[in-house]
Length: 532
Image 1: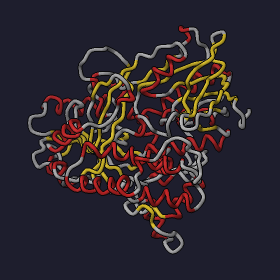
Image 2: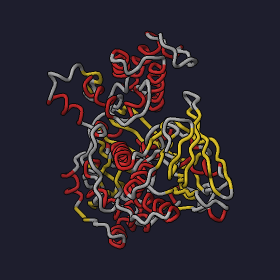
Image 3: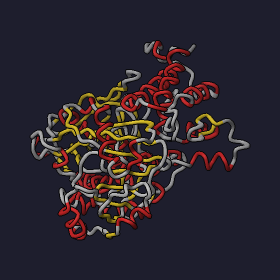
Image 4: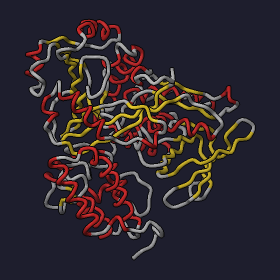
């Protein structure tokens, strides 16, 4: 295999750096295969990074999609056993409020039992004892085995493990723009690195399209069709953690009916809005208001708590119908397309599904790839634990403060005070965060750590970390400043729909620093490699 030229050869080209793409990469590597993972932005840039971080027990789907419910139950149990470092096993509550459908609450335990999900009924007073933030008006409650999961650590560790096993490559910021097809086979994938203009040709034996909401666009490059629609969902991040457990509304899935603990914060969501193009996905003020209105009826504190950010993700849903009804009626299942009826023999697409069922999706895709390549090794991701790999643990809330307290004498200054990320931690990240890039910028570090995740949303730490990268020689050209500008732009996008109260004041301070003081918006984008 060549690695240092403009032609790269590999057994399998995987397109899409979400959790399923990372899972396919690791599954293939455990079978002894080499693959190249191409991602047009960065790890978990799509739906895998734009969700609640909820490891479903399956209870949410027992009425609308029993098959998906059973898959979630089985896969959730496997992940709790094989990747415990990525999971907080919180448990979950489903609670009904006055006016909710009584028949749904009555049927809920039987529907859970049919899917193999343990649902324990409890008195409202007992639920209030467990979670004091709940409304005192709740009328029914069940305990289920929901949990929260860190999807970033999960993807980063799977990619790192695949790299250790067979030297697999991750190419970030690289987009497939064209396929060369000969005699029913994709013989070449033409790729473009948007920021540098660098072109690359990849010659694969098999191509796996797992680009999530963009899978239809990738398939079209090969002349294939994927019946997928785009459902955008907006979520909100609170400034503090409200509940210890996952809280679900005991009703058919709707807006603002899930609150998930995410370390030191809680995440409220989500909406479901049909959009025409996944690139149009962004949070809106109307969706923020809807989430708060619905969520506050079961947790009153959601009306007055400070929100530090909103974000959106796009669900790639298999198109069962094209009507204008609620997209929550569409299946949460997944599908594997082998594209053989379209005359392609080394191309497949896997799409749909959920974060909780990514491993099963990866297994089915890797099985087909292995059969086509004549590889007899079985899937091992059902039995081999995901190893903890250094450099991937910094996405977890509380990891940086614990490290700083343990060695603060030699850890240097805190560059991110909200999440207590020290200069030493940033140095470790740049050395061991599994990023192949020159002029490593803060945007990549933000994906791999808690930098910018706190109340200031990068207002101070963005400047400090970028200055530290220049001071220590990690950045040399204008590319570091452009990365900082991209990082701030992404943070601003998530704050605009929640600008009131304390977060409005925080936002205006950040704007004064970044625009009024250093005129970052005036930074020219041309000649990014220029050194001054």
